[in-house]
Image (cartoon, rainbow, N blue to C red; front, side, top):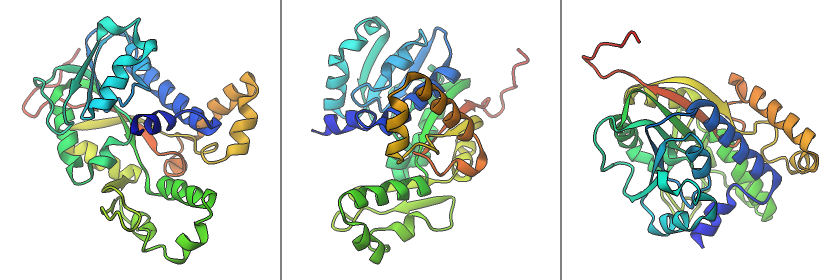
Length: 282
């Protein structure tokens, strides 16, 4: 069941498809083509694995969930690139690879947020296994985007008034408080079925710098279309309209004022040279 829910995150509704396609295009833009090893951290059932395999590198898919890895291995669309795909069961905070093993790391699915108090350790491990000059593509959950998502979900289930009457009980006041990193505690009897951290763009930059990365690009995911079912459904019916909407989303999504309004945001960052190591002139 959990595998099915994870697959549905980026399929079905038109805005979910838009959110997936924008992530895929961002990965293709920055990952490019080239040999070498690429780490996909948290692939789930393999929603973005074909896109990463299209870079022509050898992909190592690491997930802690055995059902997710089994679902990944069963994906028919991966048969063509199967010779360049390895699956490994491990935790992102304890990766079983040598230092600098990968030319790039792709971590979609808001792994940084789900790591919560272990977020710094997760980024430190990613930095360790990504070679200097290598690329990191990271998915980040913003507090405003998460609150919007939650409020829309409660509206669909007719719980919106109940939630707005007691925002503190459902952690809305905690999620959107004035901070670059906000924390949702684990409290299953209330709203928090898991511990989670949300980052503003400035907060994400800060933790990336601390781990040894320099941001080179970032983009909000569907700041126009996310949670606007009518817009995305209408555009989805016409390929030309869909292409135009996607282009608008990518343009608007790079404006600083929209980075928190969409379905989270994606960041591309470069691993800085190790301390004490000279920067190459090449």
